Length: 393
Image (cartoon, rainbow, N blue to C red; front, top):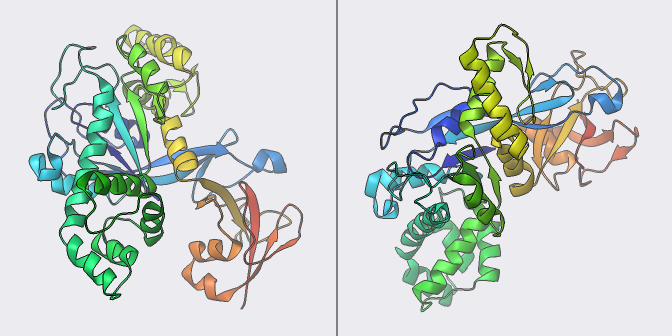
């Protein structure tokens, strides 16, 4: 699973990426500081089943901190988009292509209204961040539309001549954009289009296709700036999925935790001061974060955005495969060794294939480690299932 962090220049994308991954990416207010995408690993968090089962886990593919399982996900920090990106402005074609690698999008928006449409710094409160939300959607939609229109008449005529089905032809035309045939079929059911469809209808179809294939959440960043509060409230009154966010605060907290100044779990609403002799400048910065971000919004928002992207947008669940259903261990004796993020509706047989491609052919059945009952190959797994996969030798 890969999640793209995108938005216009100077909205805080790379700060968010650095906070989520602790990768030291270059951060500045220069246009196009990010040219090639930064790539790293962030973590989705969920309560670990170790406490429910009364065991001490030994995670191998993830981490467990105080009963919270941290499950890795790939993050890609896309360079800032500018108006007209779909026409190639600002290396737009390259950046939009990078966006299409992802399963979901985190759109970082400057909620303080302190950057104009081109990403240039302006007086906070003078730009409407809702315009930025629409801007990114428009750039993606027009870019996809341009690719679709290249052979649109030919595709429609092939459909009329029964040479091919329209959904298959559209899927083929958009190959490489991470858009599935099922995405195309669902979008066509909701917004049917044909050869003589006006551009407005075509855009409606493309918009639906984007929503199906690249679901998006807005991180209302710079929430610690006073002008952001009213904008965040307005954003939350819309249908847009958004979370108040302060990437700078999260980055400061994670660095302080790494330096053992504080104890902090990403997503928490407070931290614990460890070094009592911390210098006054750091102490005041931490006090500001607690008062103006954590107390006000309940978190910095960075972790909540990642979690919502995985669980609300992509409808993922967490499952724990084991080899010994009695002790919840791997073959090497590690307790609850792995936590897998899988799409809701995943079956035990599909899980086996995710663990190793060879397991798909060798799959016999699965066992629910809690009940010790067998699961059928097509049984739908539930969140926090602990599963033994049985294989042919």
